[in-house]
Each structure stands twice: as structure tokens, then as C-alpha cells.
Length: 343
Image (tube, rainbow, N blue to C red; front, top):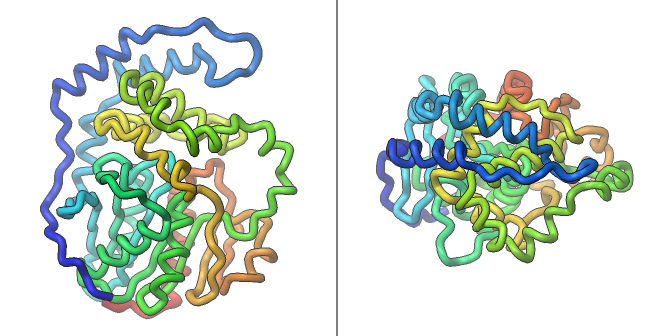
């Protein structure tokens, strides 16, 4: 496809010390509500302990350095991305799309292993952390088209694509739109899901989706002014996805919370809901599909997709790259090794 030939510049994360000091001061002076009776959201004692750790023990600079260990770039239209090339010049290019509500920190533990076999491109979704939201509405299709442009700008004509959650929406859309470029579509799950099997749990959720689809600006004031509010929202989403379990490494959670805080993107990251882009991955059978943690929905998924690998892996968390990085890398690698590398 034709490239827009946008300018790319080297990028490095460098949060001013004044902003780090401000975060710690805000955390130290959080106004805490009284605990409400029953189970009515994130428990106050839990969040007090986690915010205390964020403000006194969590080492942002070390995680900033871990992110900066990967080559990063910014396009002239405001798309931030990691581009970690393999030592093998003939490796297959692979574009990774992270989830909501997360960030490129989702892939910190998988990129090093993936570069053994792939040239990895990991963009920040528009409105997430360092990627600009802009003034025009984003949709899953628009993101997929922008990703195709990005890969063309990098000189990659044939490549694989992987995604989780929001990224699992973008990835098959990218494949469906550009089958001549995408050799395979790999996602963690979402295909073939029948909500009737888990309807009771679904009905008991917080019902955050409809609110985000209507009033994200209102929530954004709290996200931008109070790091405790931002953190409470993130941990509630993660635990709700994971059936109430607190299974994720707190440093990884706090890294994404910090990225959202320093870039004031807690509100803008919700565009997947207010633009009507949240949902399940599209079905497509023009490009081979692999699913790593898809649950018991393989039979349904095969009806409308060219499934060539369904590994049936299990993960303690919906944030698969955080909870099962080794399994995910193994699955991605085995799937894409079916296809010849190409540029």
C-alpha cells in the first residue's frame, strides 16, 4: 500500500523530576473516603496500601529505563512506537497491539524473547500514553489503516500481527483490510465467545462500558487530578476482568498507571468505548488465525475464521503478556513460524 511518508524521530521517555515529585506529593495527600458497607468497589484499605507503595517504594526511574532500553520513535502525526529489530535481518516483522486499559508496558516481558525471531513493532494506541489522540475520531478500522501505513513507512511489506483485548480487535481488522500484507493474525482470545455461558458473572459486573460510551469526559477530571482515582479505576478493571482476583504484578500495574498519569491519558484512552469500538474481534477468513488463550469457544470460532492454531492455553489474567509471557511467546512463535519471513 502507499505510504504517507511521515517523518519519524527518535523518542525517549524522560519524565521531569518535578512531575515525579508532584505525583508523590499528591499520593501522600490523598483524601480518603470512608469505607462503604459491603462490596461496592475497590476496598479503601487495599488502595491505601497500593498508593503508599506507589508513592514511597515503586521505582519509576527503573521502569522508565526498561522502556527506554527499546528503540522508540515518534511519527510527525503523533504515533509513538517501539521498533526492536531482530539480530536476524531476515526475521518476520511483527506488529503488536496492546490492550485497554493498558500501554506498551504490556509487552515489556515479551519483546526481548520475540526479537529472537521477529522484528517487533509495538505502537501505543492513539490516546494512550505518548500517542496523540488528535481531533478526528478513531475507530478500530482507522487504527488498522494507520498501522498498515506505519509498517509500510518502516519498509515492511509482509508481516504478522498480534493483539490482546483492544489489540485483538485491531489485529483481525488489519488482516481483513490488508490480506496481501498480513501473513497471519494472532490474538489471545475473543473469537467465538458465547456470553450466555457466563451471563451471570457478566450481569454482576460494574457496567462501566455504557458510562464510558456516554460520559468519559466526566471521569477524566478525576483521572487527571488524582492519581489515586486513576489507580483505583485501573485496578478495578483488571480485577473485574480476572473475576475479582488480584493476580498481576503490582509494579507492572503501577507502570501503566504512571504512564497514564504522566501523560494525562486516562480519559482519552477510553475512546474505544465512546467511539463504539469496544466489543469482540471481527470474524475474517482471508488470513490464517491463531488464538492462544481463547477458552472453550474454538468450535464457534472455526465457523467464520480460518483457525490454524488454537493452543487452549490458560492465563491467570486477561492481561496475558503480564501473566503468561513465556506461554504467549511460545504460542506466537509457533504460529508465525508456519509462514515464510518477508519484507
